[in-house]
Image (cartoon, rainbow, N blue to C red):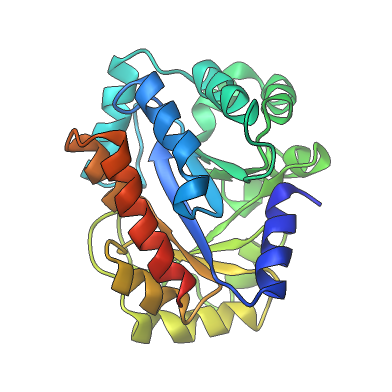
Length: 263
């Protein structure tokens, strides 16, 4: 079992919902993002989703695109991101870390080399949004053989014919995208999300975590109440972009986590 599997098993036994927080590695700079990352578990974060900056982030909205650009301008790379995880693991060996990004930097490093470095650094799972299930032999299957979860996204347009293919080699959890479009584009609605989560859960035993469109503790609570938990990304990245002190960013995250845990 990975740290992800263990965390969700514990949450299930405690009848608690999960809170997943996304930050971009290296935004606004390496040391600040590491400080925020180190504070996330104490702020109530159950799983950390760590973005790898990329020059063509097609699934991301303006907020995360700008975060990635700030990180790239500061010299952030995949190598530095893995080293950031290694530094985090020096003090925390329990909180799951999911690396979220695109295939190009991994391909450039080489899949075998990347997987060796990722597992050594302490990565638990991967979300690679531009690799469809038809390309599972590229990274998904090797990653799972290396002991990493490969987390797939389902969306409002993933119909019943496509869903089994999406779920086929998914592990850890299913990430349900609550809205059609890019990150940070609209607000999630529990009344719309609930039936979709139920549809997915009818075809898998994996936890279903909902992301996109969550920016307040109340929305986090509402969405978590119809799923196994929620993800907040753009709203946290906006707090970081505003230049607020790390402590203030973590206070905001704590409020969101409290909302999700009440779901």
